[in-house]
Image (cartoon, rainbow, N blue to C red; front, top):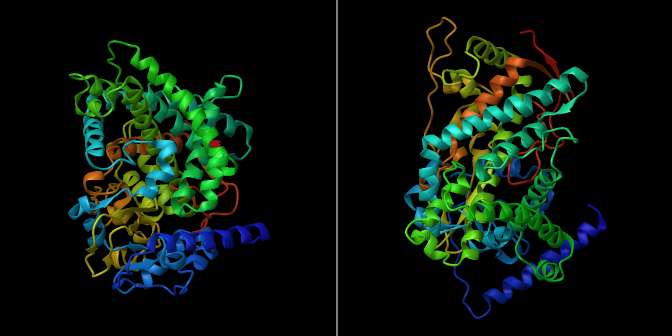
Amino acid sequence: MEMSQVAYVLLFLVTAGLLFRLRRRGAAPAELTTTAHRPHPNPVLGNTVEFIRNRRRFFDWYADLLRAAPRGAIEAWGPLGAGRAVTTACPAAVDHLLRASFANYVRGPSFRAAMSDLIGDGIFAANGRLWSLQRKVASYAFSSRSLRRFSEDVLGVHLRGRLLPFLDTAAASGEAVDLQDALRRFAFDSICHVAFGVESSTLLDTAAADPRHEALFAAFDAAVEISFRRALTPLTFVQKLRRLLNVGNSRRLREAVDVIDDYAMSVVESKMARREDGDPDLLSRFKAAMDEEDGGELGAMFPTPEGKRRLLRDVVVSFVLAGKDTTSSALTWFFWLLAANPRCDRRVRDEVSRSPDGDVKGMHYLHAAITEAMRLYPPVPFNGRVAVADDVLPGGAAVRAGWFANYSAYAMGRMEKLWGDECLMFSPERWLQVGDGDGDAGEFVGVDAARYPVFHAGPRVCLGKEMAYVQMKTVAAAVLRRFSMEVAAPAPSMKSPPAYEMTATMKMRGGLWVRLRKREE
């Protein structure tokens, strides 16, 4: 670690300790009892030193700790007890957090503060009635036949007009291309179209691309990275000073959010200026909901035109974030896992070749392979809430009011207790019933969401799950049908998988560089 980093860490520890003491001054310290496993905390610094040491393999570090925990839950904290959190990998506890005691676990003030510049009052930061109203409108939208048809049309346009031609060019050149970057740009362009009703063009060649869309793509990347780091660390005096002075990452975040605001608000104002809007995109649907009978209950919460515009901006930005890196992350690891497992690759390609072009409904093995890829590399590997009141998780771990209550989908996918001795193996067959033996892979059979919380669970379960599967299967089938693929470097092996980035989504560090070859028709 460089000296500047060491100095920053020490300053962070001292400042966090002072803030914690000030916060606790005048209150008698409560006795903290728990049955959760406490993995080697320092009496003063808590788990901070281990966190810094394992910052590049955070998800694996937590998976190791959770596997060693007798009851599948651990307790960790920062300097002088700050930021205390209980993390679980037990399905019963996950069900408790996300469903049975849903009302007791909310997005805490630290998360809202960290993400407020980016998503404001959007659905992923909202609690209570504001959340339930947005959820209601969104559930109607995602269950709508017109939105599903619109999304499938958008998918087809961007697949045939953007992604496949881009990969054709890469195959013709013979040069390696970063497939992860191509998939991220494809997903971004698609979700912007679905959310805003406006076509984005980050995957086009430089001459045809709109520079505003490239700037928007970069701004989302920067804003998500900085906001995620904010959410992981307590708000210290140094961070407050940086925000006040608008320097460092605070300035970068503000500049990125300004780019997002300029684009999003221009689209929102264009929609607001239209008297009637029958467009099927998400922005139009939320606008229509706020226009009902003097704005309805959601509109009544934001009675001014400026307030309505701001909420619409927060809503669509939140959904862009939800779709921007999740499906592309899942597909990136899926393609790498196929390269590392030739037997599974052959089975997927065989199923794709036997299925009609564009029809992915009957591709059970492909569905199982994508699901298995997300078991090992969930797009959102770590998630959590904050307890409103004292509680006890199934298994006996105490969670005090104000503590973080987390679950690790990444660790759960690597638990022998849940997936057997071969839990680290990529095996799509674990999701399939036995077929008829005549080339039939068998039907896909899912499991309880609390055991496989890749799409969350309970009232906040992902509304776009079905849409995400359609997109991932359609893209995977189209790419596998058209190209053979060779990972450029290093050679894919389950024993030495690529490193991941420490971000909100499971991105492959350095990208997935592949060489493509056009398959014969």
